[in-house]
Structure formats: structure tokens, C-alpha cells
Image 1: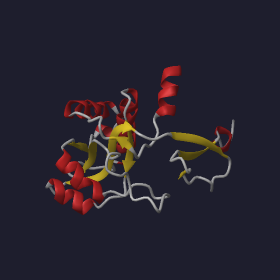
Image 2 (image 1 turned 180 degrees about the vertical axis):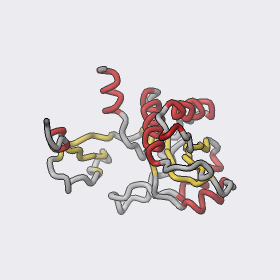
Image 3 (image 1 turned 90 degrees about the vertical axis):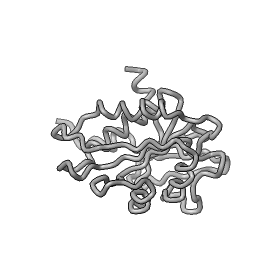
Image 4 (image 1 turned 120 degrees about the vertical axis):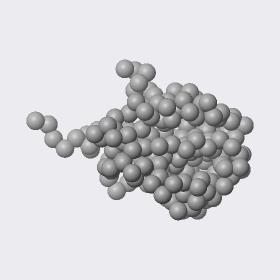
Length: 193
């Protein structure tokens, strides 16, 4: 249990990476493959995945992504700090059902597995869906719903205690350390019966 707890604590959203550490297609396939073991509402399995490791497609995908809503003056990682791979999560709209349940669990499986391998990532939901669809020539039934940026972390992310539900904005200090306020368990439990 201790190892699992530590893995969950270490699994943070990283937005700056060491580009010298390239993620291979085989590593990416292994991470995406672990999403198959996630629960799926009605076992419908509506998710599909695009694996992006080539420099050409990484460079074409990068400007279509929004990186950190609370860091309004930051437009994303600089060259040398960009992801070395992406997993684009797609909803197959030919399969009925809302993929949100599946997406949360599957993406967490991917990020936990990445963390266990010394990698890190960030879920990105702010992107141009139409442009991503066009970039990869996706069939009409495949709707891009999430991009997971992956790489070896090149930043420190620390959790800070917040007892104010309105104090949730992450921020960076002068040294580039990324601070993430989290509510305490006593703030989350609504009752005991």
C-alpha cells in the first residue's frame, strides 16, 4: 500500500520536460495498453488512442494545445522542455455512451504507469479539436477529447495545503517551482454516519 500511495502522490501534472529523453513508440504503446485495463461504463470501450512520437507530428501538434490556464503569461514549454510524446485520446462516436467516465480512469492508468517509469505527463483538454482532427486525418466518428503530453519531468511540482476552496490556482515561484494547492481530507468529507 505504501508504494501505491507514494506513486499516487508522485503522479503530478508536469508541463516541462527533458527533451533529451525520448519516449519510444514501444513505451508509448505499453502505456496506452494499460488503459485497456481501466473500467469502462457498460464495458462499451469507446476510447481509441493516437500515439505520437515523431518530431514532425509533435511539432505540428504543440501549437494547437493550451498549456496552463492559471499561468496566463506562460504560453507553454520552450524548445528543449517540450513533451517527447503524446497520446491523443479519441471517443469513437459510433459507440454509444458518454466517454467521460472511461477517459478519467484510462488517463489516470496511463499517467500512473508513466510515473512508475520515471516519466511524467499532463492532461490537456484545451485544444483545437477541429485542427487536431484535420492534422491526423481522423474519420468523422473519431472525436479527439484529450491530449496527454508525456516526457521526463524537468520541473519540480509541490503540493501545498489549502483550506479555502477558492484558493485552488496553481502558480510558479521565482525559481520555477510549480505549486499546487490541495484541500485537506477534512475539507472533502461532507459527513460521517
